[in-house]
Image (cartoon, rainbow, N blue to C red; front, side, top):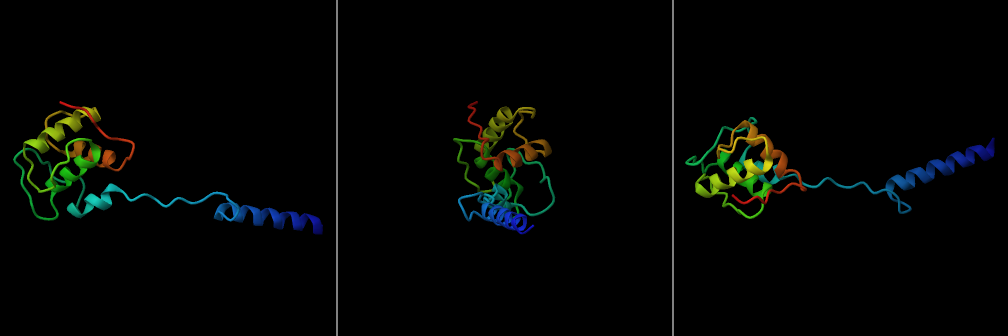
Length: 134
């Protein structure tokens, strides 16, 4: 009986050491910061934000326009929009590029509920980046 207890104690100790990385075992990875942590300062109220499109201007905080620009920057390559709260021709083109790339969205330049949800998902998914040129 004593040998069995010793084996169990050794086994429990080994499992604890593996789980805590004590003998080169598993390491718990810390979660990467989400883009919501970066872009979230632009929006802190209900989801989804209101629809924005070319001509929309909101330079205050929180700002749905700034949030859209921030999410577009993290969802696509090449645009590097200035997050200024003015949804002009560059933001409109970026929104259309994203809508074409993401698929299943109307390509109209309007950032409405469906585009917001896709943008939020893509911006927080490191393996997604649209590089489609229109």
